[in-house]
Image (tube, rainbow, N blue to C red; front, top):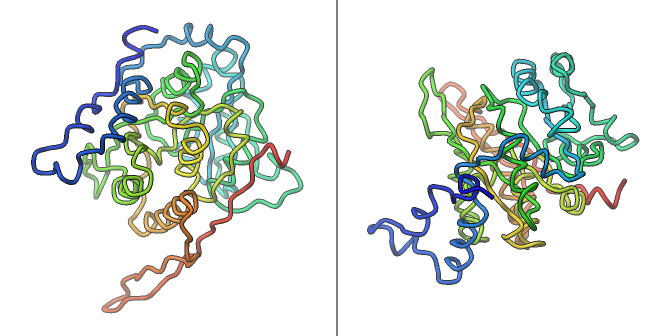
Length: 335
């Protein structure tokens, strides 16, 4: 592997060398350092340099599926498909947009851009679909044929055509890697202004603190909730899928618990822009993630929905959103 493809991510030193004022809080234990530092050096790619031709040769008979989960993304889905479609017939063998019940022109625009479009019902016939992202990703594992599966969110703005090749690189050229997470800088747009590094609010306020408390070995994963990642069918068909927005953290924790941190890699995708969600939606997302993390760590969850208080004139109105904590079973046990 070339030097460009094996260079560890730029933040590795910063992670293990906290500032003087935070030493007592952020200094990792001896055991955590022993796990995380070698992992950051061996399983993180900050400047991936694989060429498409190199990756195609590295397939060695393996096939690749790319899945875009989509729900009412008519304004962005075609642009995402456009960045992946040129890889079809070479690096990528299958490109599917799995529609999660869109009521707009998502399916039409994805199909026009060259993707194969499946509904949830078509992906797994005879089984009534449940709402949420975890459901559609679970069904996509059953509906695809690739030995490797890459997931890319369909709400991306100006996606880089190198996203999929970079995600596949560690799986195709490495040994013993089963899950590759993308990491990136995430801008945040608020009232027309853009903050270069303000995105990933749920990651920084919910997922990362909980990982530090419950699975500190995974705090070196830069984007534990990111929607751009790839895995082996061997892994993805053998683990349960958490419902809703708990799916990404569930897969990360399950991979670590089953195979250890050496089975996980991460790769720098540069900049990721997408439609930023309002704070209320992030609260609901966070509730699902908390429930999934607690379950994976053997901690009982109350199962209570999230109650938020919406401003109504001079008063507040309570609104409760129910939470689902029931996983879909491993695909290999169902299909």
